[in-house]
Image (cartoon, rainbow, N blue to C red; front, side):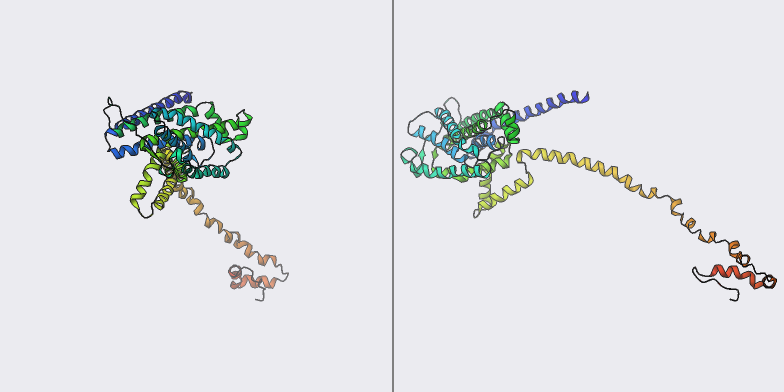
Length: 415
């Protein structure tokens, strides 16, 4: 009965903490562009758009159980879709967002069909090949993509009524899109599609027995993931205003996957932490070592994974578990200490003084038994008896016999 009463209170407290955390995060996010410098606001904007891409990758890798090393290609597809529409067709910025999302969704849907029969390392190699051959393809399509020179587009300008600078307005637009994308990912995971993805990730055979269509949901996972990456690429074009094939090499795909793993797989907050890692760690490693920033970057990844194997999102839970476990161990040690100290008390003094009782062998060899030797030697002649009675040295024979060592031959009368 106590468990039933405590559970609603615990859920209510958890929801209250989550609501307070969201409110504090929203207040900090809204006030950030008014506190930081323009370049720092630009970095925060890049963190938000990377979070959108990692949210889509989290659907595929974290919740879907598949792996992809080609999300940089979907990111590039969304960025070039927006750049071509802005530069070639002079469309509005907001019109490019749904087109980029829909185009990347179809691209991911078509790419997910042949990837159904692949898994593990083979799927990773196929997706990596997609990220490798896309930049040279963009260079070949010079009439559309601008070739190696890339495309330049206008940035999203703030309206006059907002009173905001360009970087602040861009930050708020990207913040709104990121909030909608994360909310969509959260609701998607709580729907039938999300539950089917989790079931297929944990046990494909059991999920198929329960009626889950593995081919459909795996393909949809690729499609949704590519759509999120395309939206992030479209936001990248809005923020940077320039795209080129060299900006979307296969290193971007590896960076996105590394950021997701460091941030935390299968976590709603992992994409945000991973996006911050992707944005800030390369610049920090560049400041620490201009000669070998890649070495510093790799060492930082190893250090983070050593401290938080489940990602940065799982670090608070590990800290709480360690704090709870330590008082428990202390209590167990205190409980064991009196038992250990009571060991000398268990050995009582009478048992220790029982050694003299064990040395009761001389008492068994009583003097009358020793004096019974002359009685056993029944000699009919009375002279030896009279000699034994008259001779005082004969009465000392039992004492001499007792003094002999154990195992000595019996002494005769002549002796």
